[in-house]
Image 1 (cartoon, helix red, strand yellow):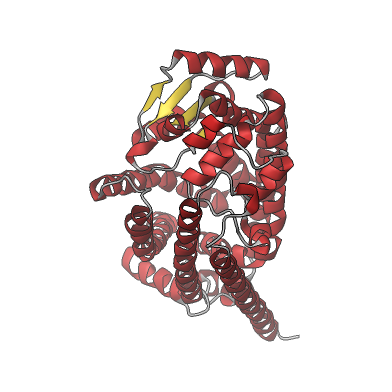
Image 2 (spheres, rainbow, N blue to C red):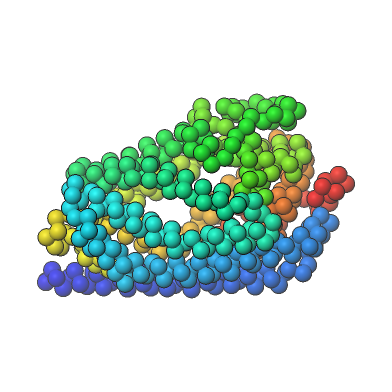
Length: 444
């Protein structure tokens, strides 16, 4: 057998498989998006019977229009993203960028400078291409529906902070991983996996107190009555947190939320100020109890373990693919170990895997979405046990209405993409009868 012929055969097969899955995935994504658009549009003019007593037609139509606007923008993003993926890979864009940087930066510091420059250039180009979509989403769609509270100055400040923070944290991490890939021997992928996991755990520890305050202000919860309710609920559920905080989410968006952040002793409960402004104290309890349900059922630990396992598989796969010439040539790159450049291809291997992996994993993504929805149902059930009957259903109705979440998504679109069950499924599981108390009905 001729090694060169084998290489060409493997490379061609890999290219065909990659291109075939890319086209098939693109067709399925467009089909699902068009189903969603058609389904939401068809049900725009009538509130579902289960919600007819609580959600006005105007609110229902606003949610439908908001969903349709985002979906149509998503179709354009999908087209541009696919074209960019093809340009980076099969059309040789990543190879051209890498070759140009080799000429400009050279092999200084054992090729480390060039590899980091490749990461930075790739990220900058991708961000610039995404920029029009980000601006349109924020200052046109979110603005049109009354959700955007950001000025352009604040948006720009956030972008600068994010870029500087990404460089400050990401570049040293990338340099360490690239160094390990070249210096840690056959099992470098195991060492890099360990570094990646340690980094993620460290990020969980420092995010609440170091990173999040860079972008938002966090004040201790001052409402003594609400604080007493929340503290009693957490004690009843056997949960402890370092503090209860209110975040100034209203300076960026009209959407409301609540979440836990941190790890171990650094865990804290955070409420958006927009959430507290819209929910009654009993409903805040119910939303918090839902989050506590995730901890009670160990969803957070399960997801972390799943992340550990999947990332280990990913690094092991990278360890094998980075040594296969057909992996590079099949994706439009001529690796440096086929030349006399003397620069390792570790950054190229990382970027190629990042680009190719979503194409190969798209059709199993509904499994993870289903698992996430199952976790949400379990957390809902726990919240119902810990709070008064109907409080969670009432809170969800307010949040769905306030966030303009469509009540009529396409069922197949839901199965593929939704990490949270749609309102109809969640409320049906709770035994919601379609009637609210007079006080709540007035609030909605």
